[in-house]
Length: 201
Image 1: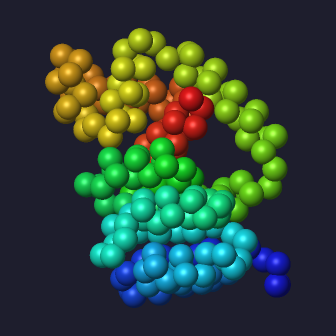
Image 2: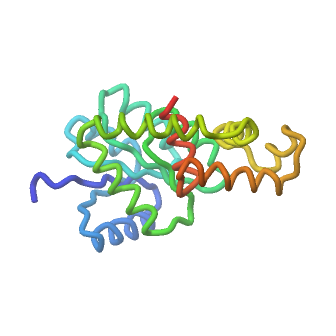
Protein backbone atom coordinates (compact mmCIF):
# COMPACT_ATOMS: atom_id res chain seq x y z
CA UNK A 1 0.00 0.00 0.00
CA UNK A 2 1.19 3.50 -0.84
CA UNK A 3 0.72 4.82 2.70
CA UNK A 4 2.34 1.86 4.43
CA UNK A 5 5.22 2.90 6.74
CA UNK A 6 8.70 2.05 5.49
CA UNK A 7 11.64 0.75 7.53
CA UNK A 8 14.70 2.65 6.23
CA UNK A 9 17.78 0.43 6.76
CA UNK A 10 21.21 2.13 6.76
CA UNK A 11 24.31 -0.11 6.85
CA UNK A 12 27.59 -0.14 4.91
CA UNK A 13 27.66 -3.96 4.91
CA UNK A 14 25.65 -5.32 1.93
CA UNK A 15 25.19 -8.72 3.62
CA UNK A 16 23.55 -7.10 6.65
CA UNK A 17 21.37 -4.88 4.43
CA UNK A 18 20.18 -7.93 2.49
CA UNK A 19 19.53 -10.06 5.58
CA UNK A 20 17.58 -7.24 7.29
CA UNK A 21 15.53 -6.61 4.14
CA UNK A 22 14.73 -10.34 4.01
CA UNK A 23 13.81 -10.44 7.72
CA UNK A 24 11.50 -7.41 7.34
CA UNK A 25 9.90 -8.86 4.24
CA UNK A 26 9.09 -12.12 6.04
CA UNK A 27 7.53 -10.02 8.85
CA UNK A 28 5.34 -8.20 6.28
CA UNK A 29 7.20 -4.92 6.78
CA UNK A 30 8.21 -2.76 3.81
CA UNK A 31 11.89 -1.74 3.78
CA UNK A 32 14.26 0.43 1.81
CA UNK A 33 18.05 0.06 2.12
CA UNK A 34 20.84 2.66 2.02
CA UNK A 35 24.57 1.92 1.94
CA UNK A 36 25.57 5.06 3.87
CA UNK A 37 24.25 7.82 6.11
CA UNK A 38 24.95 10.30 3.32
CA UNK A 39 22.68 8.38 0.93
CA UNK A 40 19.79 8.54 3.38
CA UNK A 41 20.42 12.22 4.23
CA UNK A 42 20.37 13.09 0.52
CA UNK A 43 16.75 11.92 0.43
CA UNK A 44 15.81 13.03 3.96
CA UNK A 45 13.44 15.81 2.90
CA UNK A 46 11.32 13.38 0.88
CA UNK A 47 11.71 10.39 3.24
CA UNK A 48 8.59 8.22 3.36
CA UNK A 49 6.96 7.92 6.82
CA UNK A 50 8.26 5.05 8.97
CA UNK A 51 11.37 4.47 11.06
CA UNK A 52 15.14 4.23 10.53
CA UNK A 53 17.38 1.28 11.50
CA UNK A 54 21.08 2.10 11.32
CA UNK A 55 24.44 0.68 12.33
CA UNK A 56 26.08 2.92 14.93
CA UNK A 57 29.53 2.51 13.29
CA UNK A 58 29.92 3.32 9.59
CA UNK A 59 33.01 4.52 7.70
CA UNK A 60 32.05 8.05 6.58
CA UNK A 61 29.50 9.14 9.16
CA UNK A 62 28.36 7.19 12.22
CA UNK A 63 24.74 6.62 13.17
CA UNK A 64 24.92 9.20 15.96
CA UNK A 65 26.07 11.98 13.63
CA UNK A 66 23.32 11.00 11.18
CA UNK A 67 20.72 11.32 13.97
CA UNK A 68 22.01 14.82 14.79
CA UNK A 69 21.81 15.84 11.12
CA UNK A 70 18.26 14.50 10.81
CA UNK A 71 17.26 16.41 13.95
CA UNK A 72 18.75 19.64 12.54
CA UNK A 73 16.70 19.09 9.37
CA UNK A 74 13.52 18.62 11.42
CA UNK A 75 13.17 14.94 10.43
CA UNK A 76 11.37 13.18 13.29
CA UNK A 77 11.46 9.52 12.20
CA UNK A 78 12.12 7.18 15.18
CA UNK A 79 15.66 5.75 14.93
CA UNK A 80 16.94 2.36 16.16
CA UNK A 81 20.72 1.85 16.24
CA UNK A 82 22.45 -1.53 16.01
CA UNK A 83 25.61 -1.77 18.05
CA UNK A 84 28.43 -4.14 18.94
CA UNK A 85 29.01 -4.68 22.66
CA UNK A 86 32.04 -2.36 22.68
CA UNK A 87 29.89 0.44 21.28
CA UNK A 88 27.27 0.43 24.06
CA UNK A 89 28.51 3.79 25.52
CA UNK A 90 28.20 5.29 22.02
CA UNK A 91 24.70 3.81 21.71
CA UNK A 92 23.73 5.32 25.07
CA UNK A 93 24.97 8.69 23.80
CA UNK A 94 22.73 8.11 20.77
CA UNK A 95 19.71 7.58 23.05
CA UNK A 96 20.48 10.93 24.67
CA UNK A 97 20.59 12.44 21.17
CA UNK A 98 17.05 11.21 20.55
CA UNK A 99 17.41 7.64 19.32
CA UNK A 100 14.39 5.47 20.15
CA UNK A 101 16.30 2.27 20.97
CA UNK A 102 19.55 0.39 20.52
CA UNK A 103 19.94 -3.29 19.78
CA UNK A 104 23.14 -5.16 20.62
CA UNK A 105 24.63 -7.46 17.97
CA UNK A 106 24.28 -10.32 17.47
CA UNK A 107 20.62 -9.53 17.97
CA UNK A 108 17.57 -11.73 18.25
CA UNK A 109 15.33 -11.27 15.19
CA UNK A 110 12.20 -10.98 17.34
CA UNK A 111 13.83 -8.35 19.58
CA UNK A 112 14.63 -6.21 16.54
CA UNK A 113 11.17 -6.67 15.01
CA UNK A 114 9.53 -5.80 18.34
CA UNK A 115 11.62 -2.62 18.56
CA UNK A 116 10.74 -1.68 14.97
CA UNK A 117 7.01 -2.25 15.52
CA UNK A 118 7.20 -0.15 18.69
CA UNK A 119 8.98 2.63 16.78
CA UNK A 120 6.32 2.60 14.05
CA UNK A 121 3.55 2.67 16.68
CA UNK A 122 5.30 5.60 18.40
CA UNK A 123 4.38 7.86 15.53
CA UNK A 124 0.73 7.59 16.58
CA UNK A 125 -0.07 10.24 19.19
CA UNK A 126 1.78 11.23 22.35
CA UNK A 127 -0.92 10.96 25.08
CA UNK A 128 -0.19 7.27 25.64
CA UNK A 129 3.54 7.99 25.83
CA UNK A 130 3.02 10.74 28.43
CA UNK A 131 1.14 8.24 30.62
CA UNK A 132 3.95 5.72 30.16
CA UNK A 133 6.58 8.29 31.23
CA UNK A 134 4.66 8.90 34.47
CA UNK A 135 4.63 5.14 35.13
CA UNK A 136 8.38 4.95 34.55
CA UNK A 137 8.98 7.82 37.00
CA UNK A 138 6.94 5.92 39.62
CA UNK A 139 9.08 2.82 39.03
CA UNK A 140 12.27 4.90 39.38
CA UNK A 141 10.97 6.24 42.70
CA UNK A 142 10.54 2.65 43.95
CA UNK A 143 14.27 1.85 43.60
CA UNK A 144 16.51 1.71 46.68
CA UNK A 145 19.49 4.06 46.94
CA UNK A 146 21.92 1.28 45.95
CA UNK A 147 19.71 0.21 43.03
CA UNK A 148 19.65 3.80 41.77
CA UNK A 149 23.47 3.97 42.03
CA UNK A 150 23.80 0.81 39.93
CA UNK A 151 21.25 2.17 37.44
CA UNK A 152 23.22 5.44 37.10
CA UNK A 153 26.33 3.40 36.31
CA UNK A 154 24.46 1.41 33.64
CA UNK A 155 23.04 4.59 32.07
CA UNK A 156 26.58 6.02 31.98
CA UNK A 157 27.62 2.97 29.94
CA UNK A 158 29.81 1.46 32.67
CA UNK A 159 30.58 -2.26 32.87
CA UNK A 160 29.55 -4.22 35.99
CA UNK A 161 33.20 -4.37 37.13
CA UNK A 162 33.55 -0.57 36.97
CA UNK A 163 30.29 -0.04 38.87
CA UNK A 164 31.46 -2.57 41.50
CA UNK A 165 34.79 -0.77 41.92
CA UNK A 166 33.13 2.66 42.25
CA UNK A 167 30.60 1.43 44.81
CA UNK A 168 33.14 -0.80 46.61
CA UNK A 169 31.01 -3.92 46.22
CA UNK A 170 31.59 -7.17 44.30
CA UNK A 171 30.66 -7.56 40.60
CA UNK A 172 28.34 -10.41 41.67
CA UNK A 173 26.48 -8.00 43.97
CA UNK A 174 26.18 -5.54 41.10
CA UNK A 175 24.60 -8.33 39.01
CA UNK A 176 22.01 -8.91 41.76
CA UNK A 177 21.17 -5.20 41.97
CA UNK A 178 21.06 -4.99 38.18
CA UNK A 179 18.57 -7.89 38.05
CA UNK A 180 16.45 -6.18 40.74
CA UNK A 181 16.49 -2.91 38.75
CA UNK A 182 15.43 -4.70 35.54
CA UNK A 183 12.52 -6.35 37.40
CA UNK A 184 11.32 -3.20 39.17
CA UNK A 185 11.61 -1.10 36.00
CA UNK A 186 9.90 -3.86 33.95
CA UNK A 187 12.68 -3.62 31.35
CA UNK A 188 13.25 -6.53 28.98
CA UNK A 189 16.76 -5.45 27.95
CA UNK A 190 19.58 -3.10 28.90
CA UNK A 191 18.72 -0.86 25.95
CA UNK A 192 15.09 -0.56 27.07
CA UNK A 193 16.23 0.19 30.65
CA UNK A 194 18.61 2.94 29.51
CA UNK A 195 16.07 4.45 27.10
CA UNK A 196 13.20 4.57 29.61
CA UNK A 197 15.47 6.06 32.29
CA UNK A 198 16.80 8.82 30.03
CA UNK A 199 13.41 9.69 28.53
CA UNK A 200 11.67 9.86 31.93
CA UNK A 201 14.03 12.58 33.20
